[in-house]
Amino acid sequence: MTEPWTVKYRPKRLEDIVGNRKAREEFLKWLQTRLSHKGGKKSALLYGPAGTGKTVTVEAAARSLNLDLVEINASDKRTSQVIERIAGLATTQSTLYGGKRLLLLDEVDGVNLQEDRGAVPSILKVIEDSAYPVVMTANDPWDPKIRPLREVSLLIRFRRLSARECLPFLRRICELEGVKAEEEALRLVAERNQGDMRSTLNDLETLCVGRTMLRVEDVAWLAWRDRLKGVFEALQQLFHSRDVESARNLVEEVDVDYETFFEWIYENALHQLKNPRDVAEAMDRLARAQLLMTRMKSRQLWSLLPYALELMTAGVALAGKGGVGYTQLKFPERLKYLSASRKTRTLLSEASKSVGRVVHASSAKAAREYIPYLRFILKAKREDGLRIAEEVGLSKEFLEGLTA
Ligand SMILES: Nc1ncnc2c1ncn2[C@@H]1O[C@H](COP(=O)(O)OP(=O)(O)OP(=O)(O)O)[C@@H](O)[C@H]1O
Ligand SMILES: [Mg+2]
Image 1: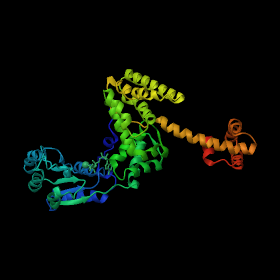
Image 2 (image 1 turned 180 degrees about the vertical axis):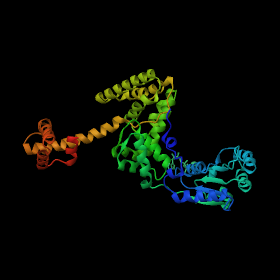
Image 3 (image 1 turned 90 degrees about the vertical axis):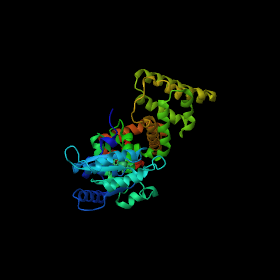
Image 4 (image 1 turned 60 degrees about the vertical axis):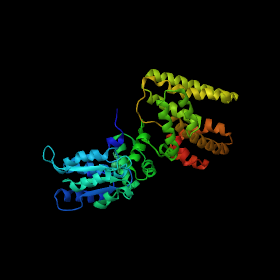
């Protein structure tokens, strides 16, 4: 199984991390001061929005200073127990090879005081007693429950990353993945995620699956993201569900119409189902579902709809006997082709009308006989072709499509 891009491209060195340079430098300076026992606060609290590089900064700093990083997720149920266990370790022992340690208490604003009342005092105690620097991270440092921790710490703020900061990083990843991406497309992905690099990378990966080009129009559908979240969830449930009832209900729960949902299922069944026999079975049921839908529309036989829906949901869910893979869900190619070809058709029909007007022919005849000839002229003698096109009043967009 391949790793997700957030893991694959997780920065290893401090200088590979995008943005927040001041915060990173401040943290490194504090860390070096603490390690050389030259004063400074005993703990640092890195805070800011999700996916801005707080945790990776700590990990990369530990690596670059050769520190043994002890990482504890503070939102764990038994934080105080874990902390007490490692507290002794932190105060007394050096590492096996005499190296130095750094303690990371990740996501301290996630401590659950109901389940673990002693969490904050025990973290405070570790900060007091520790011979090693202690660093914490939080999304919301103003959360009252972590006030005692905030008060003893050096606060370092991480800000959302700007699209401009993210672009070079995204561009490099696309290069490494062999995807030619339009600058504007990458900018859209970054902007939509508002400085959260984790979700930016997740989106970019979803968009790039199985393609070598990423254009603006491939990204435009991100605008539907909130609706798509629902579609993603529904598809996950569909491929993992084993009973007719819950699979069938998904059509009502999902926020797209049943024909769009059909396209999503059709596109993803192929990638999600591991066993070729299951895929064949799923495709067979989808084909029958589509047959019913076509018949239903042409003969107004609406009573066929429930059968079609049942085949495309429960029929596919029950086909997955041989297991389901954990691959990224894909946006249905056919939906993209449909909208792309709709655009081409509109351009062609406008152009045929213009040509028809000039040559006194119907637009059908213009499309059939004159436009192919124009294409030929454009290829053979571009300047002549362009002059004719201008005279006829053809749009630049249409000409680009014609000679592409
Ligand atoms: N500044 C960045 N530069 C490059 N990659 C980043 C950056 N920030 C986040 N990432 C990517 O996002 C993933 C998550 O980053 P990280 O765990 O550091 O976020 P965080 O700020 O700790 O978020 P959270 O508050 O949710 O814990 C990383 O694996 C990495 O792929
Ligand atoms: Mg984190």
